[in-house]
Amino acid sequence: MPAHPTDPAVAGFVTAVGTGDKDAFFAALTDDSIMSDDGTERALAAWADNETFSANGPQGAEDTSADARLLTATCTDSTWGSMRTR
Image (cartoon, rainbow, N blue to C red):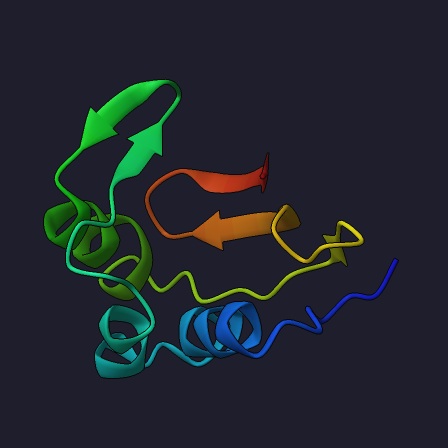
């Protein structure tokens, strides 16, 4: 499977995360987007700032599903270290 999503909306989101572009990250999401971390719903803006943008953790997709809706990456940040994430 490709390491970069073929769906333009998903690709834009992955690029925003990988480059640390917070404005593009939120522009890629709908107003009703939610975030689940280990099965617990989180405040999306606060979570993204704390776990991605302020934690020195930009990353990109390593693998995607055929429909580009399931992404797998090894996320590394200054708070938690490295972990496989889907």
